[in-house]
Each structure stands twice: as C-alpha cells, then as structure tokens.
Image: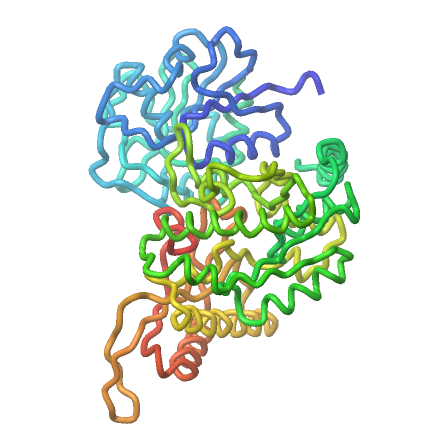
Length: 188
Length: 317
C-alpha cells in the first residue's frame, strides 16, 4: 500500500475533474482532488494532473490559482488536460488563444512523434474533445500528436517532465485514455 | 477499483452515527434514490419513511408500479400526490433553469411537510457525482441545475444526507446489485428528477406532458422489445422529447400541421460524456410509425438526435 504512487488532481473547475480522480483511483494509485490554490509546499504527490476548466485562456494571462507555482517548483511530472495543457504552453513561452475550429465531442488523433506516453497505443485513435481555445505556438515542446482541426493535441517539454493533452483522456469515450494516464504516471 | 462491499459497510456505519431519531428519504424508484434509501434502511430500519412524490411528470404507470416494487423491498413508502401543485408552479414557465429551480424548491417544500409530520430532522437523497458537478459552483460553470443540488432553496428545514455523492451511475448499479435490489431497479435507465417537465421544451402543460409521456412509452417499449429480440443492445438511456415547433404533414389527403418529437438514445458509462446510439433503421422506423400513428392528433413528424455529449447534453433542458 505504502509504495503506491501519489497522484493529485488539481481542480481548475472542469466538468471532468472528478473523472480524472476516478480513472487514477481505478488504476490503483493513491489520489485526491486538490484546490488549485493549495500551496506548493503542502503537496506531497509524485505527479500532478491539471484538470481543464471553463476559464478562457485567450482573454487574459491566466494563472489558474497556483498552477504556475507548481510548474516553477514541483519536482515530479505534470500533465495538463485541455485548459491545463494551454496553461503549460503559456508558462513555457508558448501562445494560446481562441481555436480556429473548436472541437466538441468525437475527434481522431494521429501520433506524429513517438513517445513513452503512447506505449501500447495505435498511431491513430478516437478521443473526446471539449475546447474553445487551443495552443497556437509551443517552440519549447516536442509536438506529439495532432487532429485535422488542431495541430497541437499533445506535447512534451524538451527538458522538463511537463506534458499536455488538448483532448480528454479521463473521459470514458476516449479510446486508451486510462493507458495514457497510466503511462504518464509511470514516468514519475 | 471501486470496492462496493467496503463502501456499503462504511456508509451504513456512518449513517448510523449521523442520524438521530427519524429520517425521510426522497424516493423515485430509480437506481440512485432506491440504493440511497436501502443504505439508510440498513442503518436505521423502521425509523426511515420513504416519500414518493407524484409530480405529474412521471412516466406512464410509473407511480403505481414503483410503489409496489419499493414496498416489496420492505421500505415504508408514502406517496404524496402533488400533481396540481407542480403544474401550478410551472404555469407560464419557459426557461429551463427556472423550471428546474422551481421543481427543486417545490420538492423540498413537499418533503419538509412530510418531515414535520414524521418528526424527522434528516432527509436522504440519491445525489450522485454528475448532479453536483453539472450544477456548478466555485470555479465550475453551471451546465444545468440538478433539482436536488442547484435547485435547492436557501432555507431548508432539515439536514440533507447524500451517501452516494461521490459515485457515478455505473458504481451505484454495482452497489444496488450488492445490497440486493432487483435487476429491474439496478439496471433501470436514468430518469431525471424533474421528469417529463424537462422533456417538454417550453411550458410543461398537462396536455403537452401527456403527449411526451405517450411518446416516451413508445420509445421505451420499441427499444426494449428490439433489445430482447437481439436486434440491438439496450442503450444507456432512451426517450422522447416534445419540441415546441410544428411541421406540415399529410393525413389521408388532408393537410396537417403538428408537433415534432425528437427521439434521443445514448451510450454512456457515467453520463458525463456520451455518444448517440447507432440504433438500426428498422427500429427507428417502427418508433416513428408508432408515434405518428398513436399520437396522430398531436404529432406529425419524428426526428432522431445524432448529437454526442459534448457538445449536447443527454437531456434537452
């Protein structure tokens, strides 16, 4: 029990925050949902997952509580979903804003750069999306996957263990979602 | 993985210590409220009175059927006929959020009246995770105010207990099965608390609710028959919605101009995301023919909804 990895879900107000918690719990890791205002020194997790949320990243330089503190000083891997993914891009000098073609519900993802996070997953798969904004530029990242309407669906920072998914692996309709989350946690 | 045995033991123990004296529970006969009621019944036995409210927005024969089904489980069930009060409350109400909030408030008023009679200070309801998630609050946007969360009045005359608050529908079904509910209940498709009132777009009048009640009964019967006959697998949820617009049709060489019914069926695990059901065309055709024939006085056209969630939601309001 005690050697279970601890993965905390940072709540940015998403509809699917609690779903992330459930998937991580079902993968049998230790997990809880924490407010995005939790001081970084109070976080004893091995990895963090930033949820999505209703806030619009294109309209302001968004901090999402203390999420940028976590990107500054949390030592383990961090994965951002949707809005969390966009925030990670901004933090590392990228750009995000209103999507040219927003995606809601079903989309097809194509892996364009192989990575351990895709272990056991085919090159193309179906995901569930729900985003008004998207990442426009991410020069500090390796772009890992794309869809027809959104070119930055998944990325990894070139040197730090920071990952982002524009889509929602925590949603039941996304294929291989639990494997993606497990692969991420196993990086910790 | 979710451990239903541990969950049941923990919840029953907690309910035992947190309830003093009598409690009432709001019971519709669905899997959530029935599972919650059985947990409380295990904890406090005869000190629980279950309240089945006839809102006038229930499905065909539902109150009568559920009453006997629930009594067979050993629960003490009181049926409150509040049909007139609910219709009066919704008179002239068009906005879906106002509808949901008015229904939520009236439910609580009815439960308060029963609680006073039963000298109960505790009220149990079958709230599950999507109810409070979608009702919003804090950072989270309100997608829809679920009657049992976002529709609650500010002042309430009892303490609310929600033993299933952190579970999703698929987990509640596992708990329901584990505590011995009949398959008919633990496999029952979801039905919203506000009932048919939110399957009539616009004002929920008696006449329009009756149309959608019959249409829902047809959709359920045709889909359940087709599933039994292995033409398809039974979807997660399936129903009809009455749209507030009309279309032209022709009946026996005569022009008609009548309402449109939308048929909705979705596949989901937990209601938080869903894909529309790929129902075989011959089943959709039988549904369409039956609705337009049985409801010929009111409906001249049937549509099938092919929207996933997101961007749609499962219900329309």
